[in-house]
Image 1: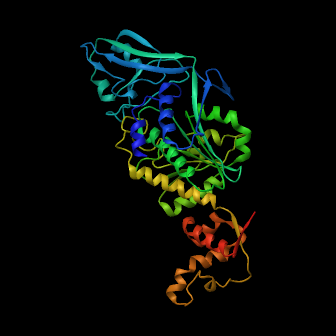
Image 2: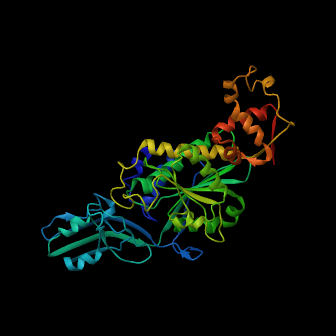
Length: 422
């Protein structure tokens, strides 16, 4: 996953354009299933209250100082240009140029990320310290970009299961060179696709979607709303999942969906000090999937949450911020959630009173204080398997992680001591 992030990091992405297509070509080459589909949605397409904008592509951007020094060089760091800038080639004094320069005064050494998708303007981003050091005089601003009718690019992979009920994962492909905020989400999605593709069987159908943030999600929902509402039982937006800091769960609007329950149960045992946020702290595409009238059961999963970690939307969100171990931890959480969902049924004991476990080889045939403790999780599982509790409930009542209960459930099912309650 980290190596994939390294390949994606240099690409200049925005909500449309060739950088997005290049990103999809790389991801498509990694996913073993040929059913990964790419869609191009034309400029002008209506999606609820939104319209797909013109496509933006850029070749170069820079400023020449009065002494001839090239600064804000797009080719050295693609955060230097205001994304979606209209083309410009003009000389102007520093007093006028400053109206088109964007900095972070409270992080004076960093280049901010800024964009203007739906209002035409041009500009550059630079560190505040660099701005303060600019000399008076005439500067030359050059942005070699094109805004013209084109399309918006979406990617979708559907992996069929035994049921038409779906679990959905989403992330976005619209930010330039930022490692945690951009590259980590698509990388994790890619490797979850690999994991799901090799499962011998899937109870759920899995839908994995990559699209530009906000406009891409809105377009995707507008094309699939009725089907998503009737089939998606749990959804997870994945972003900022590559660093080594605490895990974060941003809940659905009311915090009561299957997605909330299962991810909360996973994190409780995987990383008990995880951070929880209610829906008022939303900020990514969970906004669209949980919007009133859409109401698809979605939560957002992060390591450091967007808007909170100090490197967010700056040049400090680089490949040093993320790590293989950080990505692995996020992957492990999602795999645990997938496995829990696959086994998240209600279970009922098929005997009255405790079954005799020893004759079935489920517990030692000699009893002692030590063997009693070793078999307590199994006995607690049996005690709460009354047909009203699903796996998430059983984890709660037995105080056991779901991944420990799953093999016990498998043994009891194979012995005929448990049955699924449909």
